[in-house]
Image (cartoon, one colour):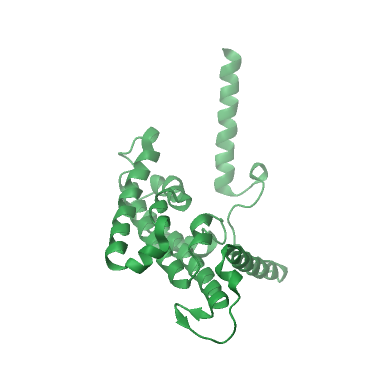
Length: 242
């Protein structure tokens, strides 16, 4: 269970797909005009992520390596279609608000990335929690961005009108998404830098890959780099002998 909780924490904080890895920017910037839209999109993606990870992991020994990507897309598309029909039936307003971005979950790089990087290589339970953690991290980020944009741009919270001040309309427009995302990322960076200056271990905040790959010494990255170097050397030897 420790590994399951580690995967959950990893998606929520350490490798948050939006605030750390900067993945899934299209729905992040497009649907977060309100907190409810962000919450709805995030939870829909979470369900698809967790279930598709679990199924892909359970079938990892059956799916041929050469056809794994088409297989991933078929599995993900099946869950996306289920979620789309459920939203259309029971939450029509949210379904209308999210629009084309619901079917586009199929090609969301977060979902395909976790299927390829984790679910296809690990057992079912950790893969499920990996998808759950990534999905909840995505949900928190989208809801936070939507909440700030809705509050400043519409003077409301989850659709409840407050009327405290005159709204700043630009936050409801496309540039507002960039402003808020940049603000949240800057706050995260400021917290990390401040902690590092005080000698605290801040490795659990924003530790996604952001360095030079060739000079990276992170264990997993170093192993992959060594494998690539060995493969290149083998190909050079083969070419030289031929």
